[in-house]
Structure formats: structure tokens, C-alpha cells
Length: 201
Image 1 (cartoon, rainbow, N blue to C red):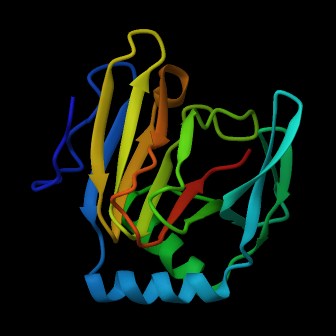
Image 2 (image 1 turned 30 degrees about the horizontal axis):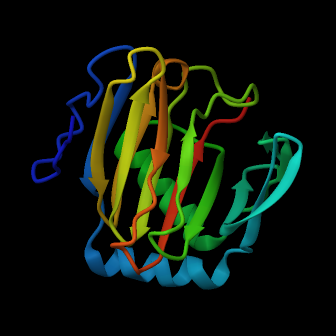
């Protein structure tokens, strides 16, 4: 199933069953989206992401960073990150996302994709340190990219294009029953920054 974003409505659940995903569309102007993209590109302490897969230590082209209210540690793909204190721009974006969604977040994982050829494989954000069934808010800046969900048992897929300045929220049992990914593409040559605001326990 393909979803097109001409009429984003956060009251609509994009998943057909066993999860909740709401797409708000752009939550800021194009000018503000570009301003925050430029600011984060310079201010964030970007590092190449690391993962241990089948015993092999891999370093990705994609870069990542982890920020939060406290010195949280976050482990995925057998690599642990430690949270840095919020920058002024991140604090502003956190406040915007919280006002828009009505949720409270205490940390943010950022990813920098230099071109469309960098993506993210199928996965779920279901680590034990995250609040069970809590909301994860995904804010997109830079290039528009396709984003997909796939049910773990039925393999049904749902896809949409995340526009610059747009907000998507995953909550409920989404991480239990669905994988999601950012598929690579050779059609996109511009960079993208994704911010996923989360709730650590």
C-alpha cells in the first residue's frame, strides 16, 4: 500500500492494524526547516554510526548523534551511545514536537544521510530502555525520502514520503508488530537529517 501526503491528517492511523502511526505533514515553514537543517548540520557532534552484525564491527557512512535530558545510555546493534546535553536548536525543536503531539520526550537520536544511497534497514525501536508502547516522534529535515512499514507476520507494507519539516509519530504496539525502514534510492542526491524524539525509562 502506498500513501500520498497531499492531505496529511494526524487523526488518521496509517497502519491497518496492530499499531498507531500518525503523520502531521510539515509542522514548520520551508524557511524554518532549512534554518534548522543548516544549524544542526554545523552544531551537532556527528559521528559515523557503528553496529555489530553477525560478529562483525561495521562503520556506516550514515552519521548519528544522541542527545537528552541526562547522560542516558542507549544500546542498539550491540553499540552503546551516551547522550549529550541539548543544543539550543534541539531544545526548540523538542518544544515544537511536544506542543504538536502532546507527548513529553527526554532524548533524541539524530541521523544524517548524506545522499539517498544511505538508508536504514528493516528494524523496530523496541529496546528495553525505551518506554514500552511509548510515542516516538520522527522529525524530517532536508531531502524528502520514502519511509516504509512492514508487518512482522503478514508482511503487509505501508509507505509514505516524509517531506522536509514534517512530523510522523509511532506509538501503541507499532514497535511490537511492525518493522520500519528508510529504503535507499539513487534518485535523491541531497542530504537529510532525521530526529527521533524518544522517552527513556
